[in-house]
Image 1 (cartoon, rainbow, N blue to C red):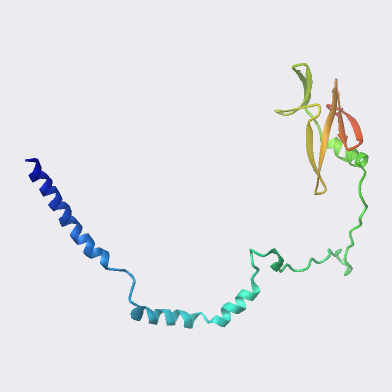
Image 2: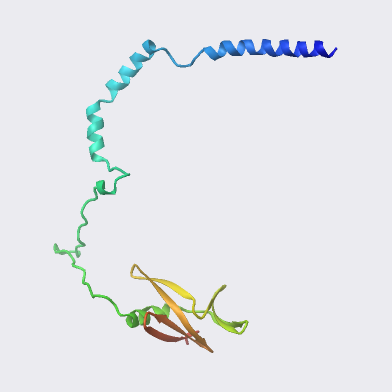
Length: 170
């Protein structure tokens, strides 16, 4: 019985493959002669001259030197035709910068964990020696917590230090 069963299965399998092989020879792509009129029509719709002119106006995303940004125009005060010239104050010293940004750093409290004092900024805990990144006038600076004592903490930027209260008196 087994040999007959295998023979029937093999015959069914072979009969199933015959239609597949005939379908594999057919293609959805038209022959060249039938495709040619459609290609010619597409070429006539879009002329090469327009494409070349369009390509000259575009920036190449792979070449940063090809970017064609318009030159920035200086800001003008309303009611005047003269441009505003920004005043460059020069580099700000670390102590001036620290005095300017320190009031914006307001911890919510302190705690002692494992014998070490921590500053609390909401859920974030900061210990002595930790860095606080700040952004001031588009520049990034890094302040260091140099001391936490009672109700005061000390910030350090470069060689400048400033001691602030933990909660400001309002």
